[in-house]
Structure formats: C-alpha cells, structure tokens
Image 1 (cartoon, rainbow, N blue to C red):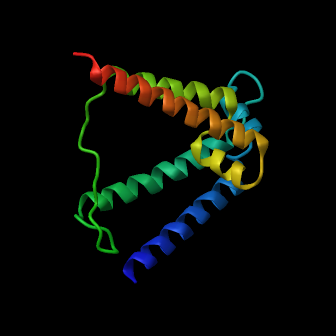
Image 2 (cartoon, rainbow, N blue to C red; image 1 turned 135 degrees about the vertical axis):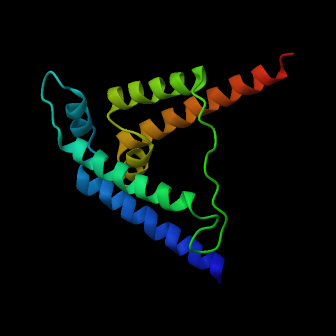
Length: 145
C-alpha cells in the first residue's frame, strides 16, 4: 500500500511539474531562445522561473541534508562529490549548447512529447541517441587497459 502511495505522489509531482513548465512557458522553444538572446529579443521572464526553481531546490536540499529518509520513509541519497572534472564541464557545455540550439531541455521535451509535438519527439529521440553514444564510448573506455 505504501509503495502505491509513493507512486501516486510521484505521479502527482510529475504532473504538477509538467503543468508548471507549461504555465511558465518553458515548453515554448521560442521563449527559451529569446531568454538566451541577450543582444536581441531578450525575454527575462524565464529568469524568474529559474529563480523560483532555484529557491525551491535550495530549500528542499537544505531540508534533505538534515534527514536520512523521506517523509514516506524511503532512504535519501544525496550526491557527495564536490569534484569538478572535465566530464562535468563538457557535459554541462553540451547540455547548454543543446538547450540554446533547440530551446528545449529534457523536462519540457517530455511535456512536448505528451502534448503530441513532433518537435518534442525529435528532441527526445536525439537526446536518447546522444545518451546511447555516451554509453558506447564509456563501455569502450572501460574495456581499454
């Protein structure tokens, strides 16, 4: 019964998140690209959305650091590494470049797929393809002595 409640809360949280993405305009690639175009048609409204998300995330992580389990009783696993390496920097750059070019990131991409958008489907397929290439390269790297 508890597992079903956890799944229901997870579903509701995802729906609220997706609704928030739609209301804030983050699923509109033009809005995202206008936010990134600081020398042209700059739209600062996404900064407010990001600020709100950062504030909520900050509060959630602050609370989570003081606990060893969720309110539903499952363990909390927080990242412990503070190491910034080449992989993190290159991954961040790839994410940022992709976000700037497409105007879509994974969360809004999934919302667009759910809305039946071809643009969202193309983005998610490309993202999965990129993840597959990464996995292949990682496996190849691990096999080398």
